[in-house]
Image: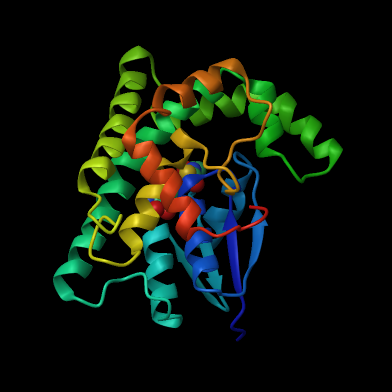
Length: 253
Ligand SMILES: N[C@@H](CCC(=O)N[C@@H](CS)C(=O)NCC(=O)O)C(=O)O
């Protein structure tokens, strides 16, 4: 049994960014294995019986789901803590995490993918970044089919569903603009899992600079319009500030 940590991930996924941020913040040494969205399911099903990443291997132990992985990290690396010490604050921070994981994260993803799935060259190039030229070519050729599968799994099914994605993104930004306290945090007077989760899951609407979640430039016009829609929202400023103050410079995703 080894104690090494391996994160199986998609580089451009906000739930994966959540775990990367937690790993970086705790200074937990780890490796990252990038899976290609689509073919990834062969690996994820074999390891966990389900298709989603993030998945973390802690030696022989396999944990999937961002909240469960952060829970395990918190146990193994208590400092710096992501869970508030005070019971009521801890409960509230975990509640905020659940709200963003279950309700806001999927809507932000739906909103951004409604745009990205209209830009297949851009999407294929972004998702296959770092892979060899042949694999990238094959991936681009498969993209029309992969994009349909992605749209289905993200619930991008016509105007109404896209409006829900936009409304959910707006609700998430409104939430952080409203709930941030005088210290700039969503709960208590220290950075916690609540701030990390909200900022990471809103990042695809804000594209914080120097972050592993900044979608590559040059960005197609539709992508710029998506980002422009949120640029003046006070919640977007909170995300940018939170990234600038607490994410550090994580380097490559
Ligand atoms: N609640 C899960 C959500 C994870 C999730 O939605 N992962 C997406 C990427 S953003 C995924 O792996 N999608 C591919 C699939 O469902 O097969 C978590 O917090 O980890």
